[in-house]
Image 1 (cartoon, protein in one colour):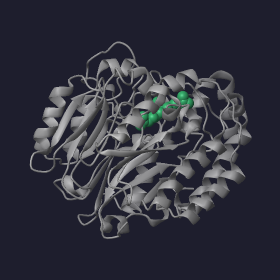
Image 2 (image 1 turned 90 degrees about the horizontal axis):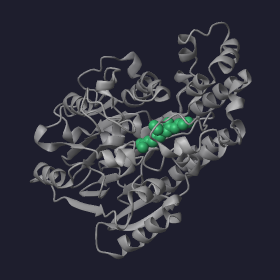
Image 3 (image 1 turned 90 degrees about the vertical axis):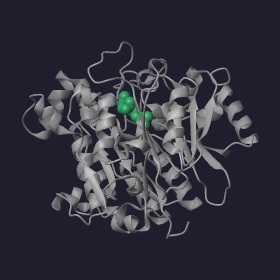
Image 4 (image 1 turned 30 degrees about the horizontal axis):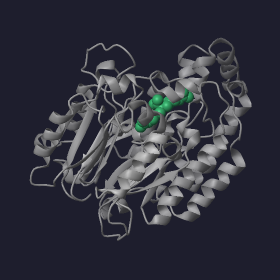
Length: 452
Ligand code: SUG
């Protein structure tokens, strides 16, 4: 990959040492079904790092976002637990074990929910804008946004915490999360797709929401409001004529597609989605074509329910794949979870897909099972940031990976992470110290000691 190109950088979440199956996400079938199982944080983090390695080897620019500090003792102290950290943990384990799981959740690994990102080619200011997602729908996820803001400010504004507000020549604008209220419920890039002719060109941004602010919906929670999507688009200074808002279908949400990226993925001029992903598919495609007028010709790839039933799409996470312009290949590559290969209808569909002459030419499978068992596939684990060479040079270099840095991170994981973690283990105050030490060692590899 040429260093003079504008490229899409994937910033993967590094899975933290407290990865566990808490059963905390209503409407996320994997989280619900695997609640209480014993997790393997070491294997989880190694699987994630191997995915990053695969892309580094292929020639992609690959970044990483380290785990947030866990346990989050603030939520426990806010809930009235007092005393030393050990006392707080021991008392919470007795009185509020569910809250202890919340405090320990490693959910920041799903960086597609960290922020919504608009590349500088799309914004009025000419800056790369990132709005941190408030994740207000689920308690454990609502704890992320403040620390994610610190983290991304540091990564993208290089010491941004000490340089706020950013000066006019900063290439980045990292914006605080929207207000913490159900009307502004925002889950970040998981409900956002950017389409374009090439990454550096002006694009069209598609925002997908599940409900209007103030609307009460029945069934599983709709985690994104139209107000939130519109607020992010306004804040980023996007051109209204190049921006499309689409409603996710209630059918998809109630079948377990708690984010749009469970039923849709897009890149460049290609939108790959399930027949039941949207409320009004024809109108959305027409809006996208109008928005793309003069920029590129949209290539929709719609998967019919008759070929892949919605339930199979959700079980296999076919759409929660990374759709990539693989160096040296003419057509796009779908980096899909191994569960897609193991599900009959999706495996057969993928075989037919690549035999055709459409925009997707190959499917590559990747094992991220530990994350999948909490409803997080390859696409959940990464935040896409389209960056010019100048922006890449201006961001914190410690989080851009090569294989030796991946080796060093894997060594830390092998030496400090457990290979077995159950809900009962969270009650042991010594585990809190173990998590802090593991994270500190990871941060040192990434030159982020300032976050320790
Ligand atoms: O928010 N799971 C996450 C999965 C996020 C997937 N991200 C995207 N689709 N982009 C969620 O539901 C489960 C945690 C638990 O139950 O322990 C969880 O938070």
